[in-house]
Length: 132
Image (cartoon, rainbow, N blue to C red; front, side, top):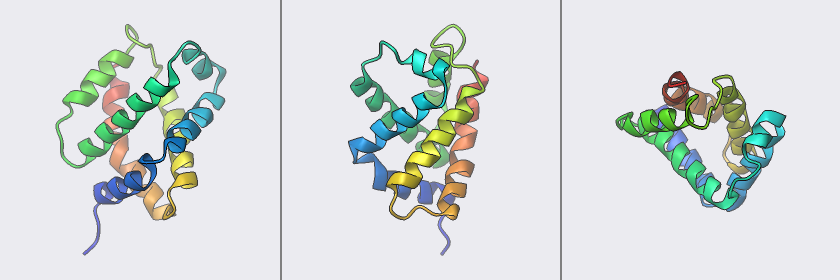
């Protein structure tokens, strides 16, 4: 039986998220992608931020598995122009950093797993981005 994208992503994330270095490497990569993004995190408690990231990615994964979009809509609200002011074009950099970090940390990573991640979480990212 063929696995769904959400199953593939759930398992891939499971292989990565128990390693705190995954989240550290993600932020090193993400902040390295743009001075604007680096500046967003200038006065941030990164340990707390990594915890939020862990939960945020899980919300995207759970949405791909059929869960309600309520938490993603709340994330969109907090990240909109009146909240953290996360510009819509930055989500591509976020996804690129995530995929590169998954490639580094998921021992089973493959082009198929990368494609599954893109298909599974892009709809959830779009919900967050469209709140802007």
